[in-house]
Amino acid sequence: ASMASTPVRNKSFSTVNSDDIIYFKKILGEKGVVEEEEKLDDANTDWLRKYKGSSKLMLQPRSTQEVSQILHYCNSRCLAVVPQGGNTGLVGGSIPVFDEVIINLRSMNNILSFDKVSGILVCEAGCILENLISFLDNEGFIMPLDLGAKGSCQIGGNVSTNAGGLRLIRYGSLHGSVLGLEAVLANGTVLDMLGTLRKDNTGYDLKHLFIGSEGSLGIVTKVSILTPPKLSSVNLAFLACKDYTSCQKLLSAAKTKLGEILSAFEFLDINAMDLVLKHLDGLRDPLPSSKHNFYILIETTGSTESHDKEKLEAFLLQSIESGLLTDGVLAQDINQASAFWRIREGIPEALMKAGAVYKYDLSLPPEKMYDLVEEMRGCLGAEANVVAYGHLGDGNLHLNISTRQYDDSILTKIEPFVYEWTSKHRGSISAEHGLGLMKANKIHYSKSLETVQLMADIKKLLDPNGILNPYKVLPTSVLPQRGE
Ligand code: FAD
Ligand code: MLT
Ligand code: ZN
Picture (cartoon, rainbow, N blue to C red):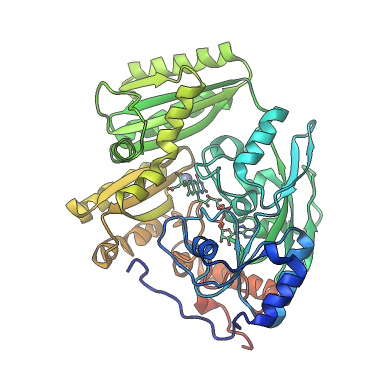
């Protein structure tokens, strides 16, 4: 009931037969070919438990060569495929819509090299983000991205979604930190773009096509990424504001007063705070003396503890005196810091526990952002809990509408309203999660006709049979059927 327009299966795709299985077992071995119902059930279901495919086959290649052989074969047989990483995507992009073959990268999880001087890490696409974070920690470095799904998501999935996360305000997007990658095209061609150079202006920078294209143009098999050094002084403040205007002013002030040490600026509203405290175990309100309308997490990262503390404390004091802040607390140690982060990072999980959730991931002008939340509350009244949080420092609102169960009458009150509102303010209907299945047909709210047409032309050039992640990212209407 949650999906207004479900696509129809493209008839030009074949169905997996026993000869296909024999071939895949020959190249991947028994272990690389998964047909067990339980494993397939997990791989067919997305993190939100909102979308469900019916694939009978998951392949787990161990090398680029194997990915290439798989794709070459699938392309010649016209078998559709879904590239899959940690399956933490939030737009239904990582699971099959029908019987597409799942190609999961989990067995390609080797770190290939790390240069301690430049901080450049080269690894396979199936490395789990948290494992990379731990590996780098031992080397005195950090990943330029961090997100709540780190324990399951893979770097290949992060690159393919151009994941943003909690540190983007400081280290920028993956379009900046990914220095190179290797990708396999639909016909099995391996594209070696695995450069490790900071500067390389030789022709079109094609790696960018694969960053954020959600598995629709190729399978990312290796990544080279620039990692920042781990700095010794990290501080985290959990703060409260009385209204949204104060949050915004606090952001401007943080940018000018904290400058180069600012490394995160996240917000959650009272609805998000109440939800996490209610549904997640072992969390305590860091500011228990009273309730606040808005909460902000500010993290600083720098190289000199005394300097950073002085700066941060002066900033906080000023903000309290000027009335921007109504309350706040600094994490006293690493445990307290992770407890504060757990509140922010735990919101998606708390929303899942609360029932059904309609998720919107929007880029909006910060001064307009919260108007939408309030308008939405006005529209829905007591029917739903409208929860807002996100990467305020990046102009990225996560607008979540939590209800007991999915209900089309609620959906019609939300869509197309949210998309039209976003489009009217020249925002993006997908700031960081991608379009996947959920928003493939909504791309025009954020992109012009000409732009979408060029995307379709590129898709056709790289994947003429359309076998890579069909029904996702682009509207089916702009893509030719086979033979057209
Ligand atoms: P999957 O979910 O498996 O796949 C995502 C998409 O990428 C699919 O379209 C898939 O086909 C494609 N894909 C995966 N691997 C490859 C590959 N090797 N080659 C080509 N295509 C591939 N996102 C953010 O941007 N910021 C956040 O802060 C954030 N926080 C999250 C918190 C939670 C608790 C959860 C559940 C999700 C969050 N996400 C966030 C969403 C999600 O995009 C990221 O978790 C992550 O980038 C997805 O990686 P994955 O390995 O799980 O990819
Ligand atoms: C987050 O910032 O928590 C993630 O993008 C997940 C979500 O939007 O729920
Ligand atoms: Zn996010």
